[in-house]
Length: 338
Image (cartoon, rainbow, N blue to C red; front, side):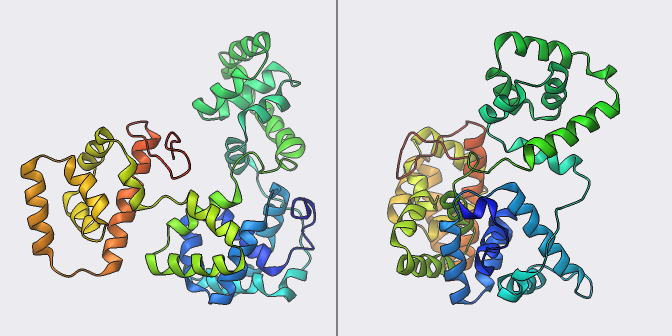
């Protein structure tokens, strides 16, 4: 696909879309919320159409972004400063600036990138390397990631790798540096993000971080331009209403994990169905006290409800990541969301 290989032909909106997908959901949500409706519409549409994005494209974009920051009078606070720079990226005349290949120390960032690579893909690349080289790489990865990579290696090779890992203390620093350089040159700089995360899923996570009014506005605009993409994103989004799909044991675990005052605020703005699910999994005394507290709370701003619900959603995701609860989705109730 064009986006994977041709940076110079990207439009300003496509560059902004790649940038937002790269900086994390919290920043992306704040930035999108601060842009004009037309800009949001064009960027969100580009996000859904990006397809596979190579790491080279991402690196080149951040070079351009960094160059534009360096031309300003120092750094400015987020999100206002980032919003201004993002508008410059959107501007077509800035998209024509010449960019150079990123030339920075690759150590820590390179290993972070490697941690996002699909285990089987990484194993296929490493299986032709020396066991010593593979051992160095495995030692740098997170244990769970390394374990899965080793599972994909041939049995005899995997045993050699384990043996070499036990003797890594004797390996010189130069060896680690050489391995980093080789990985960046032959693997990281050419590998695609196709095995990491679908762009629809990334957009869904970004929209999840927005307040309710911005989320509604963005989804309505997206439905006007691409109803199919909007429907897919809506299916992937994880909302407070989805908590009703958690089994009773999971709800009880979640109730114990959240702060009581935050749960009261969150439930005050929830649907009757979600309230019922939570109350059904409380003792009669706790349920009665919760009802009384909600009544005494009085009117409350929608923003406070959104913030409380977002906090509880994050706690639910953390519990799911630790396999303490299972969260179902509208597509597949057996799927666990992390």
